[in-house]
Length: 561
Image: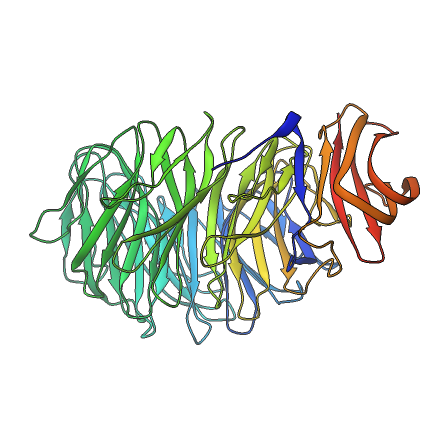
């Protein structure tokens, strides 16, 4: 990614049109640590979040209480809220050990499917009934179906005597459920009376299993080698083709059938994308990476069948898995990337940050227009515009959350960040049919979830709490300055004094500095403004500098150290 820093100026582009405005944020948690791991949205706009909790947690983020208590060290929860953030219900289940839910998907009728791992004996009925299942080994895989009211429908489990886990799940238009994860040793993937045994190569293999809407086994496939590998995500295109992504080391045969398609990593771990048809027949596999470590953590498919992945990489990586070359480099620390391929695995484009700090993409989704939304975490000051422009965001704490929007060609549209003075991490982001963006994850202590100039602070009750945030698609700052007007502010973060300049004279300009509570720290008016030094009065923390006149305005977050 090419960038030019003149005198280390942070050139902050004001062309962030079509930005998203804050709608609401909700949080819930107890005095221990809670983890939100995935979310899904149904056709009515209701939001379902799954994860783990310990102890007693009030899952109603509103004025009322809905307390659930774990039976073991960690139990599984599912919470449902409506599009306005109002609590509907929450359910939990688990045994005396540690249980985990990693993924959730919703069918067209609102039925809920979840997958993860469990240990010992677990009652999978979150209601008054009982549906006990016991693991064969250290951890077994479960697939659970609930109706849209959270009532138990069925549960299926499978696993061997070692460590097995369901990591990601999705559903096709016929209601068939696909689950991906990893397993060790020999596992019978048919949870019914018949058997479908598969034995892993090496310490573990990746599996994909298919069941119908009643939980009847259809098929299971696996691929792997003698070295390490991990599948992070599974998704389907409109034709029912199956795509998985993750990362691997060494040589792996990605064809689960009688053929052989070996791919070999260049470094410690490379990224793979594999495609099969709806019957589990191998179509293709692609890989890309460098001499160090790369990870793909999320995968999404658009309506045309194009594939998007996000994660992190270090060093120099050729993101074109074909004969071409498309190299991106990080400055030494992990950098965030988005890569796009067509349905045949042909490279289209890749974009990244520069890895000056620590930037990791954790979730990616695509809207109906082909716009790409990715979320992740970062620290320091990072330019999120992968093109010739600049869009700097500065973290408040050791790890803040970013959300970026690119168009279908990978062109930058906007980037936002939010968080507190500690470490905050996003786990999943989704876009509904009308373009609303939902993000869930975890946060520590107090964090501001409004990425704009407003303040929406939420405070955790324990070590980590769970948040759900909604941004709406209405245009924010519709009168922002024309994209030809560039504003620079240096340094940011600042010890107190900073230099503010435009690339051209601006008439009748007002410059306002406010603190996080909205209190005006300073306010100056200029007949004509080009540049000037400013003294930021007040204690260390976050401030907002707004420049505006009759033709537009823009606001910049400034961090005083």
